[in-house]
Length: 334
Image: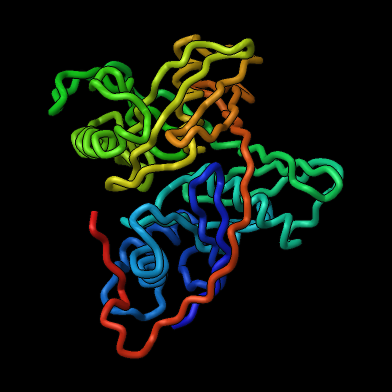
């Protein structure tokens, strides 16, 4: 087995791009469902096998993230992507969409305007999204992730945790997120609190995973994907300022402010009136990187959020499976 990857990061969060991985289905959502159903047994070159091979140690790590490029669902998109992490395949990924916008323009996969905006349209398991790449003199200055409709699912769910009773909101931003103030569990979103943030994030995710509000009409999108814990930093001249950490899958920590998680926060703040039309959410990460987000459009049941950031190429990797390697399927210590 041999795979060549193109590695990027968006606001510190890795995104490993891989082409020519076999996936099966008429849509990206079907490809995800089939990849999950197949599972991993021995290394055979299937999507889940390749995920484990490239994501887990010793070739990756427990917080690695990436995507397999797929055909689009139809001619309305430039390509599709099957997002993955250490525990499987996700339904949405904003930081990955931003990285894919940069990759598509830099590689010439999508013809671009060197002194203007280029829209890269991508099919993902939760729907069709866009990365609007703004360039000047052929240099990427900013990328805007335009997400699927995001909406509030439930407010004020009372939950008893190991850190006391808390109120949790469930929001959809392409994936289902539980969100609460870090202060409500005695923490703050700073690196010294990372271990405790992971623990409570995992606890809340699994406590609410089967909650009725987390069960969507499309069952493939159901279940809580991650927990967003936030610090309220007041307001800037243009809108609310918050810092967050998203603990997703089973204990992964998003180094970026989380693209789809930021979209979910936009939906919640729009519903509560804390983010008005024309205002900007300044959204910082646990490592102090930043996304800027706004309400691009209001819908009957939520909003269309836009999240602005940038992505940077890390390099390319040529991975191979050495004959007789006993760790061909990778391993995780988390």
